[in-house]
Length: 206
Image (cartoon, rainbow, N blue to C red; front, side, top):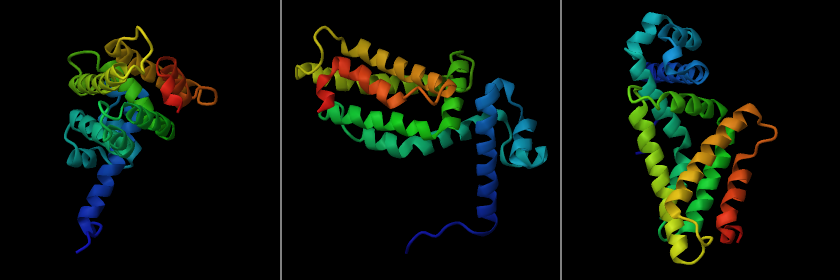
């Protein structure tokens, strides 16, 4: 039997929760986790403070929901890229990740959220510290595997170290995201990332 969309009170509750989380994306993206307040989130979501507490008892719970929403909205492209094994399909995997970067240009609110929270989360006491530490570690590992595979095939520029190049790639991605938020007319994230990779991987052009 095909699944049906939720109806009645459950659907209404899920709708309110989604509205709250989307309002929280705006609030966290503008003022960060510490700067945003529960009352501000409630105002943005168009509900009472008491109503907000009915759905989310704390700001930490809101942060968890926001990070889950960010993962949900970027999952389709990220999964398609990471479904390609960087050890056996390195060029295809890298092209897939370029697609993720291009798709991020359609998610300015989530990019702003990422830039603000990632900066705050460098503090070990920040509730999202572990989340971002693991995310960056996974990205570096993904790129390092692809670059190592290409080096073994003789397709990586001579002298390039896969682990170092992986760190540089993730750093460039973060920097491009921040620059794009300041100047969306002139900064092209995917094109800049591709040009950088071509310096070390001429085969990417094929």
